[in-house]
Amino acid sequence: MNYILLTGGAGYIGSHTALALLRAGYQVISFDNYSNSSATALKRVEKLAGGNIICLSGDIRDEAALSAVFRQYPVAAVIHFAGLKAVGESTEQPLHYYDNNVGGTITLCRVMREFNVKKLVFSSSATVYGDAKTVPIDETAPRSATNPYGQSKLMIEHILADLVNAEPDWGITLLRYFNPVGADSSGQIGEDPNGIPNNLMPFISQVAVGKRDKLNIFGNDYPTADGTGVRDYIHVVDLAAGHLKALQYLENHQGIEAINLGTGTGYSVLEMVNAFVRVNQVEVPYQIAPRRPGDIASCFARPDKALKLLGWQAEKTLADMVRDSWHWQRQNPNGYAENK
Image (cartoon, rainbow, N blue to C red; front, side, top):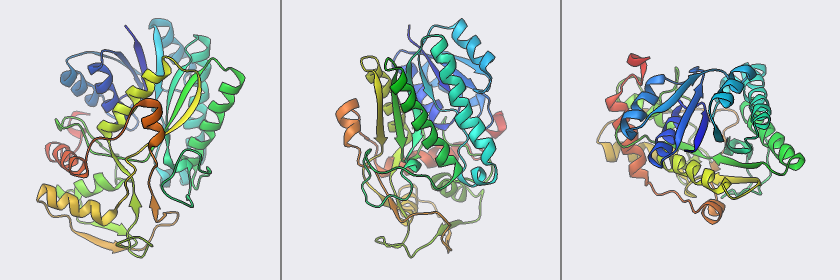
């Protein structure tokens, strides 16, 4: 049995990946401090998959706690999701972000090396491309970061590259996500952000369910077809499948590869809102607000490398994204709150 350790396994992407792994026959270990997640998500995953997850509570900065996991279980590989991810918060608490994201990753890699586990799938982000000069963005595009959150992801990419350079027997994939949205079609697991959502889709969903009055669309004067920002939205179920493919790729490969996970298609904010309204037959009141500092006009992936190396491509449509997001929100108007 292949034991796969998911750091941050109870989170939005982690829980969907746990479901994909269980269905593929893997044994899943989740190691999570539940700072931005809920144990309920993993209980629901177990029910959906008809399998068990080894759920452990702990912080990736705690070397002794991590070592105990590797000592007890024959971990074959790690998928590293654990990390703080709010851009605004990162600018207010940069030391906290660097300590948790960068420091935690160094601790994780140190423990992995101690137990000779050298297969790692890292949850990176398209934020490492900064304000890309051209789109679509491929993996060779220049990297930069405009905030401490993005900087932490970029630092980790450099650290992992240096690690492979020094110890070539490691196998690491850096998965650069674009904009994850949606939920499992069951409506049992989905995105449950703390406080005011930072991302578009949960905000749209919370407006639709009556939890918030209206959506603010930040800027309608960008050089795009309708003036609103364009992004590459990818269904979280497709994203989870990408992690499974990356894991399987590492079974026969060493070295390090950066791989975009996106659809290759950009949708504007207004297109997302209109699709949500049309497909789900609900109202989403919105108003135009001033641009936010640091926001860019257009960002979408060139996903060819994922298809070539992993045999992966996004399959879910825009209609799937908005339908599944609404199905989750309608069934769970307060997210996992009542079960936390």
